[in-house]
Image (cartoon, rainbow, N blue to C red):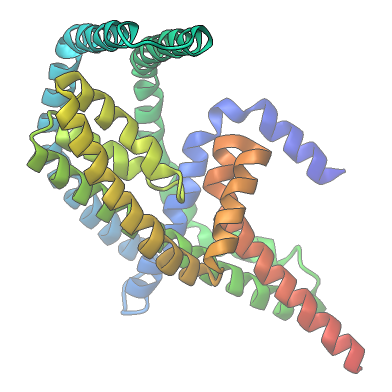
Length: 332
């Protein structure tokens, strides 16, 4: 009953939850660093201050380098958008004119006509969605600004919060529950680290490849590919779509080169890095990772895709615990 009530409340206030979710993730990532510093003689508050100052300074320096370039590319993209749309429509017109001269059965011709109309409508809708999505940037920026503030208070009081949580666990079961939570924490920590590593590597390599091909907005596109890459297996495909569309607007040859380059990167990432780094970090076989991603997409859409692998990893830890408990009970 209580769980259902909390779930209903979370659904009702879901629009205000993103900064709190980001704050929890940030606190989860920073807590080991703060504990390490505190173990070397600093107070927790001093360790927290050192961590925030170091990461804040590094982030500010990186942003001072990247933001002018990103803003310049965004401005250039917005100014160039009408030309890109016109170029894509002209390309579709040429394709349509070319196939009309090819003898085709009437049924096949109707199917091609419908396919071209659908493609043009999809491209136009994609541009409209992208423009509308710029409004989300304000909300996202608000979350990114608020999340570190919330995380600061969580990290400052995390020991007291943990003690309060421990009081909710019966004393006779406390050691066993804490052991199980440590196992889950190890799995989730390994997953987060591996995902961030792969996303950063893929985004960087993709940006360099697009820059080498001479594609405009390579930095912006590489950043987008890196961000979408947090979605296991499906992320590289989603991230490649804007790059291929922009390349197609320049020339079919550049589009082919872009597809080849990003496909090679995706295949290396999907076949080598994801199964070995992510699957290995959470102790899941690559086949189970793929199944978890597809099942998550089917059950919960985009959030399900993002949460599929860590949920599967936690489920494995719980199943192994239940198996150990059952074997201990059967021996007793």
